[in-house]
Image (cartoon, rainbow, N blue to C red):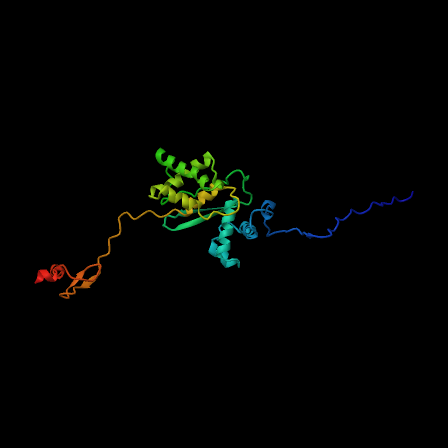
Length: 266
């Protein structure tokens, strides 16, 4: 019996492209990070922001990602890194909130999203765990909530990209009320929230505003006004006695005689 011969041709190799990139991929057995094409091929993020997002996603939990730490690690500098972080916040890849520890120290908590929710929805921002020095936010009164809601709803008049849903307004009202409770006029709050917005489309306005309301909240005014500084000491031009006055001149005893006209003196 004749032995059967197998003449099946070997599988065809993929054609080599005539131009453009050619990939030679090897499997990573360890030390790798999965990064989505929605980030690496993002058409609205700068190359700096894309690279920075990939770097942050590769870091272990608890790693420092402050602007200063990143500027020490990369050659771009603090200005470009800060701008890239704002881009990532605007597109939902990053969220930063400030928290006061029981010791009084204020820290910034950063959350990285490797696959943000759909562009039509705002990414959830996990609230920091309440502490003795930072209890859970108090629900504002109906009047305060109404004033905060009107301020937030009116932001789209300043920039159409800051269009908020009714749910976003309810969630942001307590943080907005904190500004109004500190005596800051609504016009000043709106001006702060809308100043220096990124030029790229803002897909998550609620996340951007939540960051600004927390990060830029001014401290409360002192409970009592600072005492006025006393006037400086002056030497009387008539008797050379020391007295306090904002400007040089005559002391109180010499002022009447110095102010008399020559006609009266005669």
